[in-house]
Length: 166
Image 1 (tube, one colour):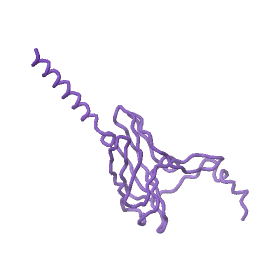
Image 2: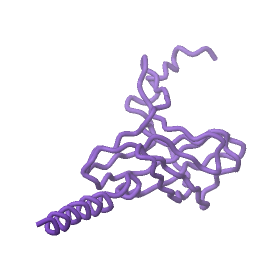
Image 3: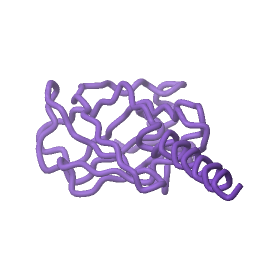
Image 4: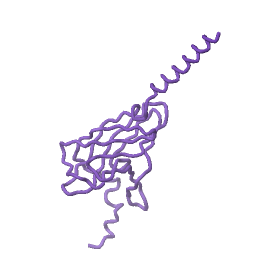
């Protein structure tokens, strides 16, 4: 009977271990698609990286940081409307709800590249490492693309251009 109990206990431990291995890290269960970095004119000191991140796990996760060899500082950012003006601000994390895709895009969530160490010209690639809340990391290679910001709804009225002194 004691042998049977030990075999059952070993089986339970093996099952628990297998389940934890199969669950994997946040980096393992996050699928990144369509990554790119915004091309900027030579001498420009900041840019941003955008992508889609699909959380394939059954557990909520988060990106809590990032790094890239092309920038002195890399931060997670978002845009918000404050007093009729679009403002960028740093965020602590980007939540990745279980089973959902989060889109990092111009005018929304993004990875900010601050203090560029090199020019970002279209046709080249940038390595970006995402850091997850469980300590895991995922390196992606993002092509540099030239993008145009879309005009905000209502044109430039939100900028109160008519009130500017020229």
